[in-house]
Length: 428
Image (cartoon, rainbow, N blue to C red; front, side, top):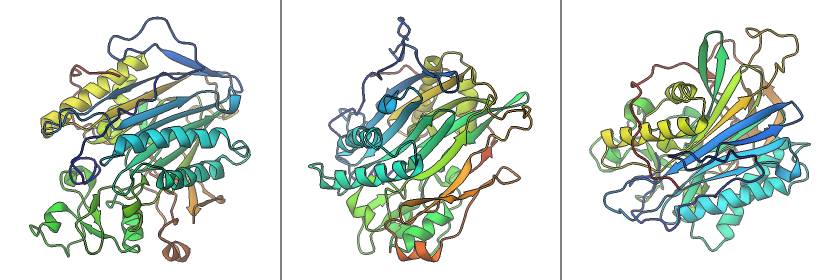
């Protein structure tokens, strides 16, 4: 969703496509997919005797006013992190602003490098993850890249044996498919960080952010009305963040890496982290930029992906449908990047539990002042719904590093559309 003029409040094109290139340390099939132009890639997880089969597709957006604009999305797939065959990293980075491509490329390189070099990663992956995000953000501020009005969101999944650690900054998303009897459920592994969320709204307001839609800023609607409905009904003119005395930066997300000006009004790089222990009920997970989820619900994406045995076909179908819906609703498209990771051959990690007894929902983590409090792991709610906590006194004292680690549990929402034939794609 990003900023006022597409992904950010500037109209300038970026200068790099941000593609991380071919992943390494995998056993690829020889035949490349006709659309993704990628081999089907697999990596074993020997500690739990299962395999990850995956593919990725990135499609640059169409902007009629800047037709030479390049892809600001980037991705990173790093298998066997630290030389360990049981640790694998998947990340999508959605840049925005004049230097969005440079920011997303910088972050996707440095974040995984930070994790790879952290000797505490296996002992305390939550702390290592949190530290990697904050250190990468500081490095970006100190780099030669101008991140005053540019930055990137980041949605990442770290696989450690049979456990997923999902760290999110911004409004990209990760979702996992869960087998529930004869049904396949879509369970969000991350929660979009936008002013639509009450907790995020309250946090940025404590940092003196003005939260207004474009119509409110331009005087077309009453600025005193601080209720914008929900993201699905008001996505066309969402609430955005503005400095107290200016018409910038206009971000529609409340967290990112970079964006040094927006950081002063609460747009922080502290990730929200969820933890999932995989079971045989987990089929695959999707990591994608908001170019996918702008018009497709998590359930629709999971339903579409479940129709294909080959993740390359699934990536192409979902990217094509996303591209089509953008053009159906607007005169442009966002950049679109999607990673699909299938979980093959995992036996039930729940010991003697039956399929119906295995609880596949993520634990809820809490972080305050940038350090993770693992003692605050909560049991899943009895019903699938939104899990929230109010801002604590500690959080109110610091808008730079305070964070409430909350996320939605499994969701089942109506599909907004019938599956359409994918549009033709340009692939990197």
